[in-house]
Length: 399
Image (cartoon, rainbow, N blue to C red; front, side):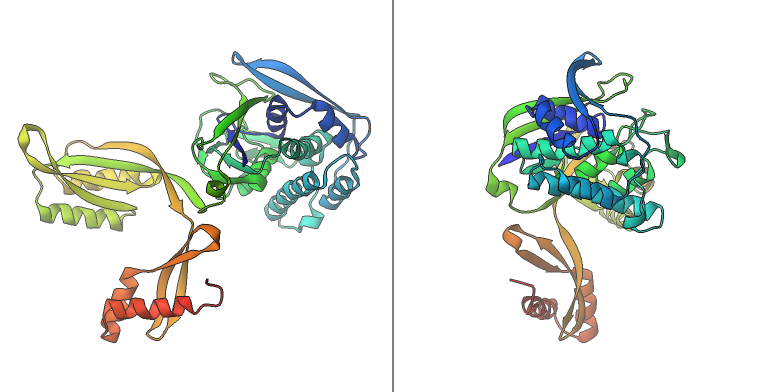
């Protein structure tokens, strides 16, 4: 399977994506031919090698006659449908990207997608970036896209509707559900076009996946950034199709806090663990260890989101005898899960369902809920789980 990994260490935009695809081998002439067939006038697409912070990258230029048109989504879709030099599969992807932008804009302006005016994204150069990207994906035969966490930049940016905070409203809406990373760079690193490209194509987020690497492309942005190259890197390679189509996974980043303790009682540690869970810790556990001077101790480990670190530290210092805490970031891989309620012979039971490969799913009863029902009904936990399993296996959508 042909896999493309988007390494967005300086964000992503339409022209950066197009430049990286050209660097990977997509002919500029193929992009220009497809874009010209949209009927937007005399358009020239050129590419040059530039340097960003000393690193080589490809910068794509879209030259076109001046215009002042504000297009609606159906205008753009009609142009794409008429383009006789764009493959049908590329047309589908291009229209999907524009539809995602339209949905985000419609939500931001409390209107319908049909009434949305495409301002910056409806300009000729942005249309060329999106259609050109779709052409590039088809030319390279990309079957799957994975992506790093996405930096948005900070500060403010001027758009057609005035000055707005970064990320711009449409960009923020498109990035919902994505892992994003903070940066002190006061620039718009990720544009609505770049976010929409990822929204339409990226199936997984995380570090560089295992693959047989075949090519690396670098696409240059317009501005120069302080202290880093303003480029998008796309890594192209081959991966096992069965693994890529296997179990769907979610990725996120958590903070792990840990401390070694040899002079807190078991009761104090249990009380602290309960307080940490109540305050929002994702997990708390204790591991027996041997500390310096041969003393037996406990390694107290807490897993939490980045926003809860200060709270967790305060509780650990206040309710244990520790005088120092280590912490570090860790990437997690998780099965895609969903909370459900099963109607059983003992009443409603809460459960979680995880997705496995080949469309299969696995159900697990929520233990606290099961305990409460068992006590209320005067039955065992096994009885509750058996009733829940019967309800689950008789659901019409389960295999």
